[in-house]
Length: 332
Image (cartoon, rainbow, N blue to C red):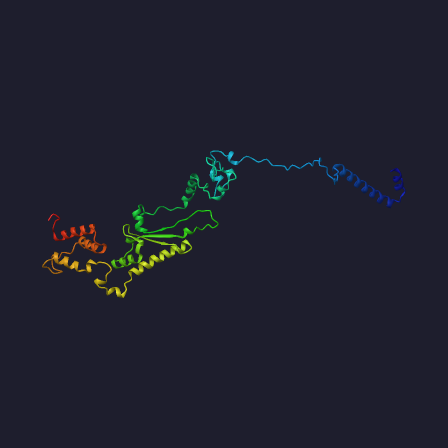
């Protein structure tokens, strides 16, 4: 090293500075190389491995798993903040011992909530607890209007709103959210709410057929041929409108119908009315003073006997009204 220093000192000034700088760079590189070799362990290439030689395996670090959240929940917590909306089932957030699933062995408990795919298949309503529903109703009250006056009872509501529409919504676990049964629409209407005369009512009942219940006076129309619920509703309203206007239409051939062409017994157009009036007003003419009309009860009993057929009730009513028409009692 001393010889090299003397040699460098004997060189010219311009060459000396360059050589010194190069020596310093080379010496610093050697020092860094030695430090790296000392820090890193020299890896031996072993082409022929012995059976007794064991290779050290690296252990993957496993993070510590915290306990489930359900074990740290307070009993008086705000459940609306924990489960604010509809979501899939999360076992660590539900502090309830929920079980669901099929068991193969007898007297065996259903699977728990952890790692249970059955609980995640079905929709849950854990976000609609009574306190949360009450809170939501209180928030919606500011958007509500007072109940209309005059609709305090069911009778008043039926008189103002005689039309009833019945639909169904289904919640199921299928690839599509539209259930085929949800398209069915049922429309119910009281026939007394329609302003129709006798001709229109008779024609209306003949058109609707078995859809009318005479005991409850309710007409029921069910539509399900359209794919959507709204389409079936529009079709039901169209059917109801067409039936009403068609019943009130009087065809030219209907004006020329005689008593023999009638589909039902009409007391006002039958000779029974004339015979009853002649019996009550013996010796008088129509329009004279003291003319007595035929009682409505007698007319109804005769009409019911011909239209509904002969049965014990109709015959008893006809006998009772006939005796009353003649002024006789049943004992006589």
